[in-house]
Image (cartoon, rainbow, N blue to C red; front, side):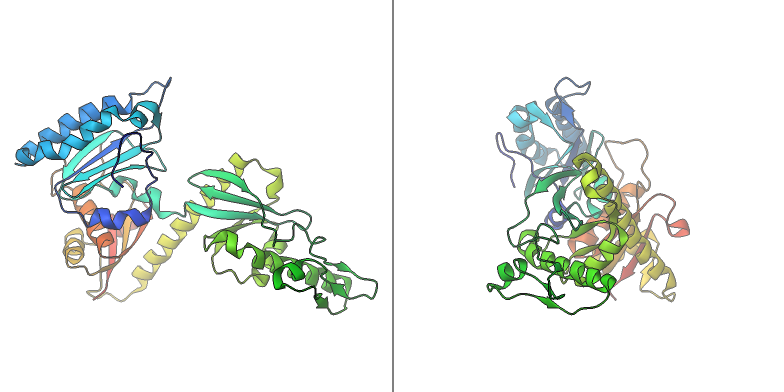
Length: 378
């Protein structure tokens, strides 16, 4: 997307990084803190004026003064963009000879301008690793609840007609002949009015069968609405376990929100969902780190930044684990090409460009392997 007058910035997602990482330099990266009228913060436009001057100085310092004016010209036009005057979320602007993109960011960033051979993505990679869009299903035999989570916010979603709203609506009740029949849910899903018949047994077995059949119908009915997006379950332990046994939907998230979703506000649910998604992203990274540590010492792994940089240039990095905030001091405008931050950013950009999996771990979690470790394809 090329920013235009009055255009709304899209949110930056992991899928956006590969084309950015493939762009040729020099690259200007500008991060703008969130701005809202009435708040004690400088506007985007004021920050942009300073960023343009800094970018031109850095381009000149790197012997690129002739290219400088052409690169900053479209950024200068953003000063008059209505959105930039209205305010909004934290933003990042990428500009290179073949790229001019503006994105919203899911988390906070400091004001900063960096000019270098690559887009400077390292400071906010950790914001992009966790699942940022998924559905949440509140399990309850009497009343289901479906929410859509995206970037820290939840909204209510109406259940499709194909989904029974409760176990009773699914026809999961004891008929007089002591068989369990579905009088509505099965007909809606299969296109017929045939009933689902359960065998008899103890009350506990029948209750279990009722719940399983209810959840099976819910799983079937939700598939079109979810469209392959991850689904996070919420409920008490036995309900979640029962749903997992009944479901065939392939994108159920690990873990769940324990308790009754109906007692929580949308804001509280979003906070808990964000925390769980971040925890799961860290657990995946820890699993990869454990796997790397368990691998025999061969030339297929390394935590030497220069060896990993060379492998990244050759497209050999398969998996890359980075430490958050590694090598960062106070945000500086000019990065020396051999600084740790610049080297780590180059490794990340080159690895993502060639399809590597990237994982982030909190400071201190990597131990002696910090600030990076990599597994190579060959």
